[in-house]
Image (tube, rainbow, N blue to C red; front, side, top):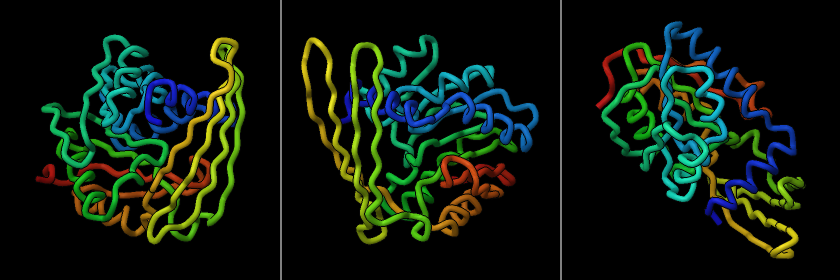
Length: 242
């Protein structure tokens, strides 16, 4: 379930659990400018429906998005008129523009299957940075921080709909397999049920750091952010990787 309605449901439920997209965007902008004080442009990779991008637009003069799912990209374009949202894959995108900062939020980097794909993505990020540009990645869990069998739930009511989400995540080799079920109820349609499965790679901290350095970036890990998943940041220190 990756349509526009699913994306809106996902956002509402996480906001109901206390996720503050605005605070996260402010934090990222501050960290970007500690590395590149004159940063004025940003590309948000795997931008989804633009929940973070909406707030990044307040922090940078030019913002754009990249999204593989066309329904999500279309929702982001509706949400942010005048903001370019490119269709593309983080492993091999080529936009033809450079940015002060490139972000990848909400654990989306974990949808890469292995370190070869992780390394390819970081090299692509580096190719789209200005000299000294910054990459900020909100990672998925590490193998030693993932809780096998973790159950999560959430509910929210907004715009005439009541939403509920329950998930169960287990280890599957070097990845986490998360089964998610949604109930959506409104006056017109009654109660509907959706479900989906996410396979998200449990990269190690060292694998993230190696991908940064291999792409010509410095790397720093801040563990206390994003609910304990942390944040990787780094600046381009050598000519952009091929």
